[in-house]
Image (tube, rainbow, N blue to C red):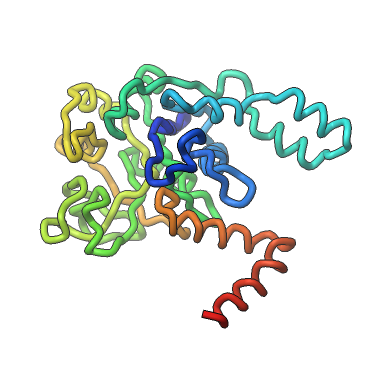
Length: 290
C-alpha cells in the first residue's frame, strides 16, 4: 500500500494568536514570506503525495484562494517581467483535482477533523500534517515517514522528547526503546499530568494512518477536553494493529506557540542571504545591549 493522500486539518480558530487570527486563519500566518500551510503542502508533495485534502472551517476561504489562480496578480507579474515571482505564484497551483476541500462543521477535536475526510480518503493509508508543526529538515519529515511506512506497512507517528513538566500539552507514548529511530508503541495517553505520564515522548503533527482508524473515530467517543481525540482512537487501534513512533531527523518549531513561531521566523530568515546580512548585526547588538 502506498501513501497517496494527505489530510490537513485547518478548521481550528487559532485563539492563541488573537487578535491576529480574528480574520486570518492561523495556517496563513507567514514564516518569512510563506504561510505555514504552504510549507506543509510543499512537504507533502516532496514526499510523493499527490492528493491534498483540506478539512476547513467557516473562515478559511483565504486558504482556498492561496492555492488557486489570482488572474489580476498573475497578469501584473507577467506584464512587469517579474518571472521569478510569477513562477513561485503558479507553483502553488496543483493539477486539477489534486486539492479537495471538505468542511468540519463543529470544532470537535483533531480526531473528528480527520474523520471528516473519511469518504475522500477511502480504504487506503493516508498522511496527516498539522501546519503548526514546522520542521526544518534536509529530507522532508513526511518523506522519511513514507519510506518507513513502505517498509513496515503499519501506522507511524513522528515523535519527539518534551519537557517532562509539559506532558499535559501533548499525546504521550508508552513505548519500547528505539531501534534505528523506530519505537514500537505499547500505549498512548492524551495530555496526561506529569506524574501520570508513561514517558516524555510526545507525538507531533505528522502521522501516517491506516484506514481502520475511521471505524474507531466513527464511534465519536469523547476524550480529553470534551473532544474526539486521535490519540484515543490510536490507542484502540493498537489492540488490532502495530503502531510505531518515528524519531525523525530535523528541527521542529512549534508554531502554534508564539515563541516557537518567532524562533521559526528567525531561523528561516537567516537562511536567506539578503536578510541574513541585516539581521545578524541587529541580533548581535541586541544581545550585547541586554
